[in-house]
Image (cartoon, rainbow over all chains, first blue to last red; front, side, top):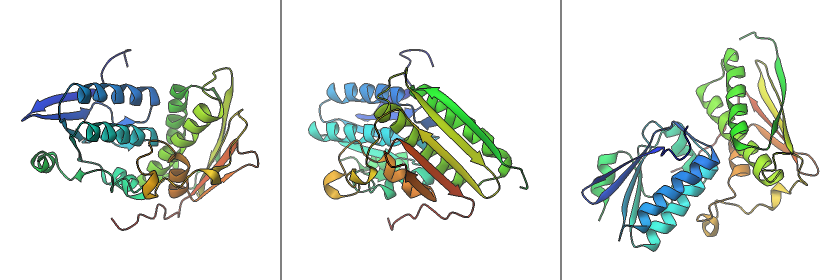
Length: 119
Length: 146
């Protein structure tokens, strides 16, 4: 991976920022930090941000990645925004349930369900 | 099945990118033994957490300090021991990350996840070495009702 290269796909659609991942494994802390910084910049530059993070094709997440998502969730809420997570692999969803983070996040089965759930 | 035991010691500097290579080496080494996708998911998750703890918390990412990994695999179980050069810690003193008051804390889930997915997880007395065992017949993780 080249230094500084983004590992995210970012689309703006219907005032919703839709974020996806280029990597199947989100484990390495430096990469996670970079993803967190990039998403935080988007949140900071958007009033009442509506963010959809799409986990299609992601096979593994570490607890550092969960921590990054918690930080993003806190920042979105602090700006009066909304965060949705979608298309999470069943094994990864189990990690959310075991850690009880399924209570913290608004998790949708599909991206379309997530898109229509924004208020 | 019917493979003889494979074991391998590895020593890496305290770099997270080196840790990623260790995970791939272990996952590759267990392939001939036919462990399930669920077991491989557990190994990858627990190993990544244990290596991150050793590198970041144990050795404070000081690349002059090493992390030692011993792993062995046979038809019955996968056993991994990871040691760092830090002073160790008391895993039972980590706050329960699943309590409501801790849910928004971004850290402190690594050891909990290791214990949730591996058959056995135990630390040495000083807390700078962890051994994790995944048995073939392990039914973990137990996933609570959603």
